[in-house]
Length: 286
Image (cartoon, rainbow, N blue to C red; front, side):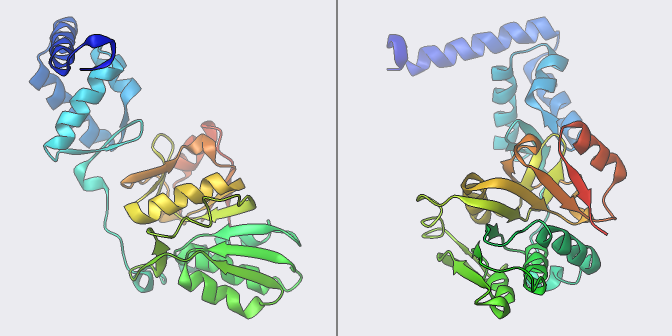
């Protein structure tokens, strides 16, 4: 039984009836509608549920049902608020392979991030090559003292080590992922699940998109990143230009949930402008 005494079979019949009624209203059958949705998603790379609802004249509940069906066939990936085509996820590269890519941009982004910190502040510094660039820039600020840095990245922690005891470096613990030398669940978020409240988080990611938000390719790391965001009062995303306009598998948060995006000069000007139109503050580091 379900709520109100209805059976699951009755709910399924009601859902099927609603879809048939909406197919009649939209003037196209179920299979054709889903085919058109799939074509649109492949063409646009990301399409929100709300837009599909308006375009086909159907409820958002029915849109989600259609997207779930397409996802079950392996044709799309569902992310919060919409869907992306199957081929848009990209492949995660090892830390050592990606470190040299956009290296100058990452150093500039790291310097811009480090400039945001003040004496006595607490900060979470994420995993990844851009986060490590920020860690090195924090170390280079020899005027900075009494800063507590939390991280789940072994590379990040080692980059910060030369500044001890000016900095206190706290490593989260957890299960080691060799690809990024990161610490993930189990055990990675225990320090974040308590009463920890830090001033700032410097968050890495694989994609920044005006509609899809901040996304990441790896699910175990994405879970830790989401907890980092909840633990910080100021949320700063660090992303070189190659990440701007891209979408990865797991959404970390919406564009409106971050305080600042720091990116590089190679970022698409059109996407940067679209992000700003969505209310996101964007700083291009030079």
